[in-house]
Length: 171
Ligand code: FES
Ligand code: FES
Figure 1 (cartoon, helix red, strand yellow):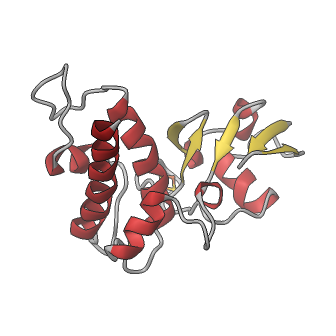
Figure 2 (cartoon, rainbow, N blue to C red; figure 1 turned 45 degrees about the vertical axis):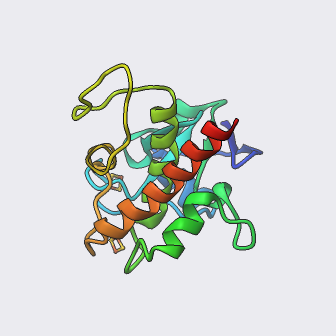
């Protein structure tokens, strides 16, 4: 199959039963996306497919022929961190770090969803979504952190969301 991963066109041969997560980790050597539950319950395997967040453990690789996949390795590099990667470091948004790649990929797509005006189950106003902490918690509820670093994860996401809002206001 052909698939673009982190901007690079790849041709991969894999069993049709291979999940996208196993394709990334076992065939392409991208171990950033983690296997926690392998059942769609923890979010550790979250990656972006054509800009939307998905659980890579729940999706067969062959379903992604021709798709563009971005993993944590594609969001930034150690000397050029993405805003969310930098904010997680700044706020200590992790302890063991196992959930962190999934948290950051998920938050990246989540901020995009908010920018598009998508409401969540806790949105009071469906036309004007205000990203308060309750909204962040609800929208990130598919990403479990066994170390319970939730307060600092929310703080990191809030910092980036606030910076984006200020930048928009200044335009
Ligand atoms: S490993 Fe995919 S959701 Fe847990
Ligand atoms: S930092 Fe350990 S699971 Fe989240």
